[in-house]
Amino acid sequence: MTHQRATRFLNAPLDRVRHALLDPQALPEWNPAFRSLNGPARAATGTRYLITVKGELSGTWEYTRIDDHDIDTTWQVPGFRETGTWHLRPHDYGTIVTHEFRHEGPLARLLSKAYRGVAELRLDRLTQRTAAAASLANADS
Image (cartoon, rainbow, N blue to C red; front, side, top):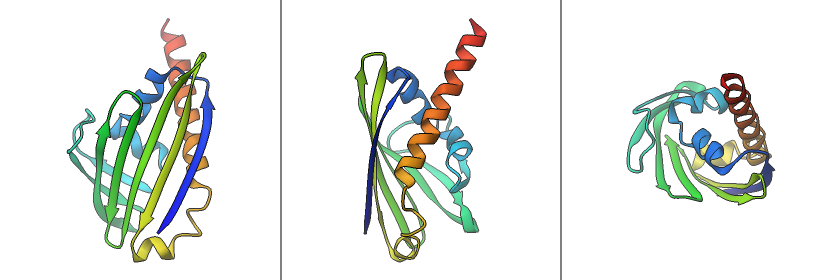
């Protein structure tokens, strides 16, 4: 089993961060491991989305908890399972985000080196998504 954790301050309000994380249809746009994700546009716990990941493996993605400050997810394909959490804490004019996840399974062991630093990369991508959302909101104003 592998475990990663990273924390970062995002110059975005908590609602904007939550919106990015709770947009399941957009996950393949900012998670390069996902080739496709099929399911409802509205995030809800207990809904299993069908995913295809690199290597054309098929599996499922699921929100297991959604509350004001924490979003838990799990996804799996044969031989690999990730359970993850996004902790969101408002701070001044932005949000402190901690992302952590665990990988299990024989494929996870084989890919463990490839996943080094991925928690930080995901925070980079989340930062980019929230900044892009702010730009769009400002352009619409």
